[in-house]
Image (cartoon, rainbow, N blue to C red):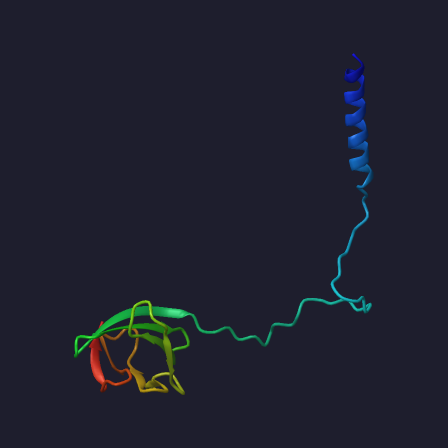
Amino acid sequence: MRSMTRKPLLITLAVAAALAGCSNESHTIVAGPDTGEAQGAPDNSNVTLPPSIAASKVYRCADNDVVYVDWLSDGKSANIRTDQNGPPTQVSAPEIGKPMTAAGGYSLAGTPTAPSVRMSVPGQPVETCKA
């Protein structure tokens, strides 16, 4: 009978101890020393995001090679892959409508809506590739 009166008393003490740690004060955690200056959100108005992928196409070239092209939304760059899961090589042009190139012998001329493009990859001549 004695343990029955202890149990509610122990539970009441445990709940009271847990609630004693609570308060309505606001707590601010600051990393680093407090310089007294409030830091607002950074000004991101000058940030330019990289272009997104506008279209992805698979091309079969005249020599029967397959090339994967991700056309980017800026209209003057694309990513070329010679293997479906391989690393991309980005080609770019100085302005929209001009042929895109990259170091090492990569070139690409065309648009994502055209049925074919002219391209070259390292070790290969420029050739026509069809979507």
